[in-house]
Image (cartoon, rainbow, N blue to C red; front, side, top):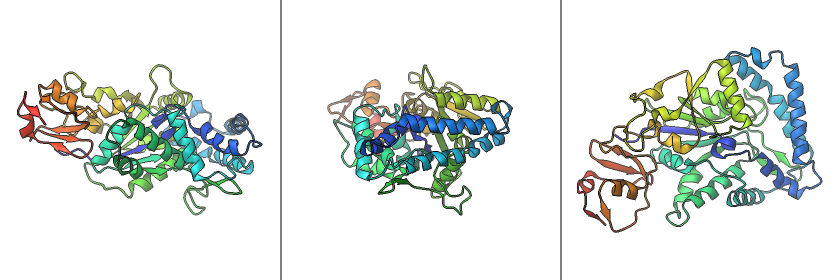
Length: 387
């Protein structure tokens, strides 16, 4: 069985990353324009506008019990977001900022640990792309270039010491990045993704509805089919429409203490009656290779979301395994090939840096994340020397 077709749509801040990158992006401009308002000042002005809007909105959060009511509230925040964007533009924060400034700041942030990526992200991306699926990032963030720079640098770091080379552009540069962008120049403007004639009206990617429309744009260009699944991963109320609009929605929740955005999303889901369950119930057990719940169709359930602490947990679910009943029971997404071979009694005289994507019991083939495979005749000789 070939790997299933999955289209993976990802939020960035708090989902791919462990924290928000907005202050880092703001500081790119503030370093060039130190007379502009501080980040704290801009943040406070936003919260003031938000609280005024909240106090005037006719339906309090405690009375919003349906999805439609919650989505209407989230869309009503568009004017708050517009005002915030225009405030930053009027202050000239991003005046003179170039693509080089942004890319350099992104790389530095990853290398110095100011931006940390969530565990297992790069292998999920590889798995989907090797299976001919689409990977896209849909973000309300201020800079797609910053996102690209972070992804490239983090990907390079994950393969330092072997095998990066040409793999980097073939993977990361094929990821669609859909976000707002800094235009810089003399006016320090930012892009507006939606033209005035669009359903959203003139403006950037600012709200849950905006993200839903952008996700639809991305998917309209993807290969479709009865077996294709759309998986969306996010962490905040801004992801609500995409999470529920995808075939499978996965909420990111930190282990231990959740962020304010994660808590708000969880409270929202509970209030409107949408359940979320730990994705580990459809995970391949690392020791026995059995589903924690004996239901290979569990991912088909509707009206419910999943949650996971990182992409490693997501990768171990049946969503990213073409065959959940492998003979030896120890085939796992992202598992190093050499570890698999050694666990199963094979000897080797060389290091193989490939990672397993999935296995196929019908002919004993192992599919690798780099697109290669290993056939059954090789695996039928335990204790042999693999060269």
